[in-house]
Length: 288
Ligand SMILES: [Zn+2]
Image 1 (cartoon, protein in one colour):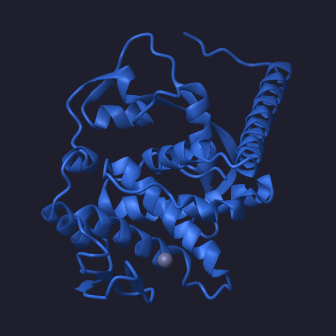
Image 2: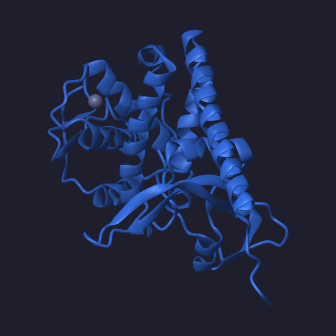
């Protein structure tokens, strides 16, 4: 069969539609951050906390794409492209409608040989509920329920930093110099492996975000580390305390500030979970 040729007019129309949809997506993202900021100013943080958990669940996607996923399929729990599902032994069920996300178009630079970004297009992904086939082993499933010392040990081994346990008294959970992590073993401060895990993730977030030589306030750093620990623990099903709400007012300044903060926390969440859940990263990535 002869391939259909598109007229210039059709091509232009397609381009215009794509650009319009891209604009709509961007506006919707901005509106969501404006609403989250308003809610924070009024003292409500539940929506933001739910969104942070969502960021952890879909950490391999950009934070804007997590919003697109949430808008189109709020019940989604695990997403991948048609091909990626196939590689994991699962098939997208007949008639399922995909979730549209933004993905970067790249091409190989003929001079340098490196891949460079040329623009943004749309990609389609599917939630696990839209697929059938082999079961998927995940760490989240492994550690759900009673989180034990053995689980903590597994995470310590995977975290990518040397970790030491030491009695630091009752006042602090742990500390880091950006290279090594020390966790308080004092049972008065950290009675369960869940508490120590939360500290481990908190310190990992400091390592990922706060040793780049840029001056930041202590409050800002602690909030970013706490938000990361909260989101990752919630994602892994580890029962821990909620995010310290007193810090959250820093984020309610402007929607733009909140978006920047979320993008940094997203970076830390991704950094932590890529170590905890080693998987090939083949999914379409950041289109921020
Ligand atoms: Zn800290």
